[in-house]
Length: 280
Ligand code: OGA
Ligand code: MN
Image (tube, rainbow, N blue to C red; front, side, top):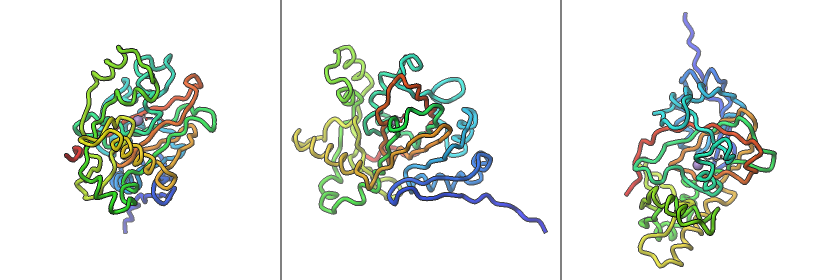
């Protein structure tokens, strides 16, 4: 008689509304045997943590490829260095300042990135530089029915230049124009996914709600952001060297919590290509 050993997904919940920890070995993850289950769990839980899995950059790329279509960015190894340190990241340290505020990656894309994978090479000192995540499916689901009815058909103009004012309140005109040249995009405030589930589309790129008085527009954007980033729907990950975290970029927001740009914090990111366009 032959026996086949099947890899079992080994996971535990972090908080009721968000996050699971996956405890499988590196070999089990790289085999791809449980890739389908990981994808389902990612959609269900928003954020998956792989504690001290210690992938090399090549392994992080290989693991990313087991989960879907690899979205190329970054260096020759296929990973992108994420740090606010201008010495390490002369091109994008400035742009990354926006990542200190709640956001969704790539709101200007026709098809938003499905997921981002971030691994920790060098953590910042404890108490700084966690990454926060908000489950925007759970946050929408828990809204009162009358609020859902009010917001279901609204649209929001998203613009990277709107996030510039969060960290540079009096920008030089050249900087403002540079950010404006990246583009803008109108997105639904409530995204009804092909699955039928609905999530909130918010974050620091939200400029205004289309066709709504400007004060009311700000109340909607900031009120829902406050709601979605409250304790019930959020998880703050304190990094250890070697941790890997994946977030479902279509059903979560995230942000880096403040850290000293010169403390050496160094993260490596890979991304999965999106599979579903924004609803219109
Ligand atoms: C990102 C990002 C947050 C962090 O890589 O897209 O927002 O904690 N990173 O570095
Ligand atoms: Mn980001």
